[in-house]
Structures are given as structure tokens and as C-alpha cells.
Image (tube, rainbow, N blue to C red):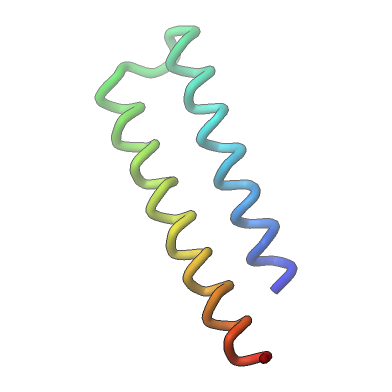
Amino acid sequence: MNFLNIAKGSAGEVRSLLRVALEVGYLEQPTYNQLYSQTVELSRMLFTQIQAINQLIK
């Protein structure tokens, strides 16, 4: 569970760093959009896993 929570936090960190990369010109908008949506999807998947495990524990 701890590793899933750390991974979810890291995915959020990646999203904010992607924004910085876009603003300083390291990424173009289409690349940013694709990577951002992938990290959002990953966060959703991690959240779903965390919820499922919590339901098993209760």
C-alpha cells in the first residue's frame, strides 16, 4: 500500500514537472498533452488499486 501511495504522489510530481517543461520550451504542446493524459490515467489506475486494497482490508 505504501508503494502505491508513493507512486501516486510521484505521478502528481511528474504532472507538475511536465508543466514546467512545457513552459520553458522543453516540450511542445502535443507532446505535453499526451504525456499529461498518460500520467492522469496512471494516477487513476493507482487510485483504483488503492481503493480495491482498502476494501479488502476492511
